[in-house]
Image (cartoon, rainbow, N blue to C red; front, side, top):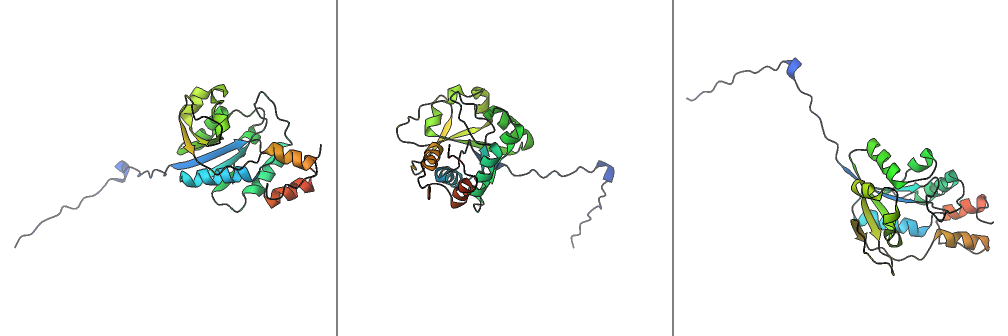
Length: 213
């Protein structure tokens, strides 16, 4: 008969090491903008990119004050945020990110991403931009540093070349020829915006008499 003896081992609690469970990395898209107002094109873009890239979330991030040279006169940031919240309601992929509005002042993407990565170091961010914006990346505030912090996702748009010195993932999205400026102009002229914006956004615009001047 073969027998074996197993020595009983004891572990001194003083030398026990704590087991650290690493949190899984999150892949989060950010769709920033003025959203003045948000429209169906924004929602289609966010949904298509999020699902094609398999992102955990797509955050809609209204800016506080657009940093563009051609300054856009936008309504109160909180009103724009409320419209975004209404627009994205019901889609579990979407969420609202208030970082830029809470910080106030001019909204520079670099500053925002630095702050977000400090809060969520285990998150990979994918910054979603239209194909027309890709050509202007070189003008963005601290773009070389920003390009190291995020992955840019370009949404294909006809008439715009893909040439850029910065790394960009390109995603094909159905072309929806809607813009916030078109919505504002139609409201000003008393024309219908039905099906151009979610019904909840249309109701908010009517309730608060927005864009009539």
